Length: 355
Length: 240
Image 1: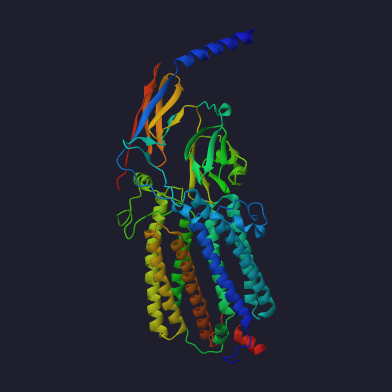
Image 2: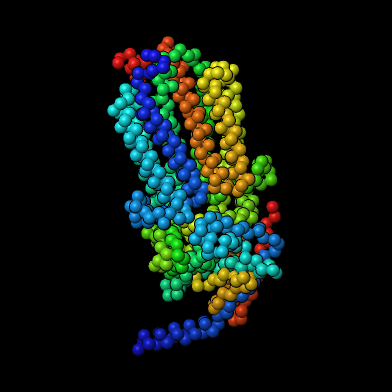
């Protein structure tokens, strides 16, 4: 197979997968706006909207929190539709069986995600909101990975000889990615408690390196808080959660800095994965800055939402790095070119040879 | 004939008790400087809402404190006293007016009706958050309910005492009201002058509790005889 013309590459399918990923990213951002504006329960019914079929809800009533929640639902419907089309397209046209089934999995996931969002509204359960936010991240990874797997770059990778990524580096990236995922779950938990900022200052916390979380201290914090759009008092658990979020953020920053340095040293600065690692580090630096800005602006909705969006990009960067690095290394270990990923699956090379 | 006699006796006893009952009066004071209130700036993001305030955002009012420390919106109750008369008491009204709840602090008895009105030209969703399961169960079909402009009143009723049950509107996320449910007719909310009166308390010894959503709680013992009893409360500002 020629490097320049991968036999199985389907430009339009790939573009469609990229479109689905972009729309999913925007959907994540809109979901962030919903929680940033405390608007998650502003439409009391589901799947209807104030008794209307959601697609027929009058634009004139898209006001206040309803605007964010209703447009979130509409965009979610669009992403669901795109996912179904992508899955059907993969099923009919893509030669890789595992990817076809992943397309089906994406449809199941997007439906489950929609139902989760609906049940969160119907059952008035904040906990489901946390789960909803977490599943969103998993779905975004899956769609981005599908965009990667359908890309010209991925198919061309099958025809190249590339050095394996050292195991230590691969596992470091995987560990950092898992840490980012855990951090996003922490963030989702904090956002869905509807208590605003548990700690209003930075770099200290209530003027201390580690804040006092005794009942008397927490009562004092609540007495001094004047919140405009959140009604719940903060708790000691929420303060500890934010402290953990801060500590994990530092750990992620150090881990990704180590990844970027090691990738450059072990793979060379021109290697695509080394560049991706550098980009990942940049994202993490921006994300830390947005986290600090979220505190200093008293959780301004636009800043807090950007924090959610860059968090999602950070997770995807790590996840795609892992996918590419493990695939490349699996191919190299088997003596095959880089793109013949995932032992036991239909490799691009093998498929190209079968054609 | 026996029934008539029993009724007359009960009426006479009631009259004697009413004559013996007295009021618990007092003042709530706040010492120190309360946290500064904030402008509700999100109101200005919505043209319809902003027009209700001529583009000038109202402020929060968590601490209603007068120039001499008179402390309003403090709920005063008698601890351990039951005997709600809520079923026969007139309904309490919570209005949504100029996209805020009015009042924001209120008390209802168990069994008493709470009417939520929408006097605004915009839709609201009335979303309550009971923490006592029995109160959630009693209102399960109305936990989050749309209320159209000038729509029909929504009626709530609670079965168990609960402090500061949160009502909110997610369409306008700055809208909150805090409903305290009590199990007796003996309660009061301090006014802007810090004063309160709990009327017609039968003679006896009581623990009087004062609760403020932000400043905390305080209790005092009092004995009610045949004249009014006075109980004053003082809350102090929390220091950073």
